[in-house]
Image 1 (cartoon, rainbow, N blue to C red):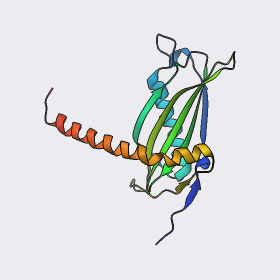
Image 2: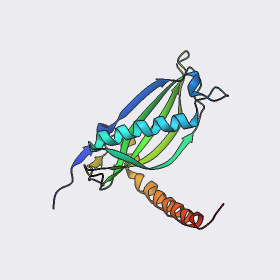
Image 3: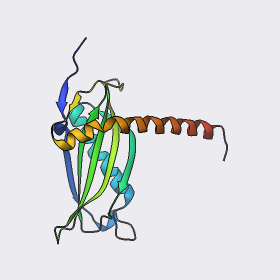
Length: 171
């Protein structure tokens, strides 16, 4: 049986910083949640592809938890890292930081966990390396991934049940 390759979690680290401009904001002057969610998926997909060195697809976004508004003129930095990997899937953590560029004040603005699957040349799930944590933060993220995966599986079953229920209704 072939031994599964391993890769350090930090090898997937992807950082993206951008300026928040008026077209990116709502009538309150805050970054649109949907814009942030799109950017989170983008940076997370880069981290997953960098880790797997294969094409990837998003299969789940657990949540995007917003803690603090990101305002016009702020810089927004997203840090994404693969926290855990299964046979073909990877969990990616994204930390979103806001920075007031005049005062230098930085804050955690949001967190998100997403799941990706690597694909082979035929578009089928493909094996990925085992994620190896090194730092204290990486060990914590890796160790707690199993409970998030269990919650994700429960939520997925509930979503399937809901889809079955609604497929038999006409609204």
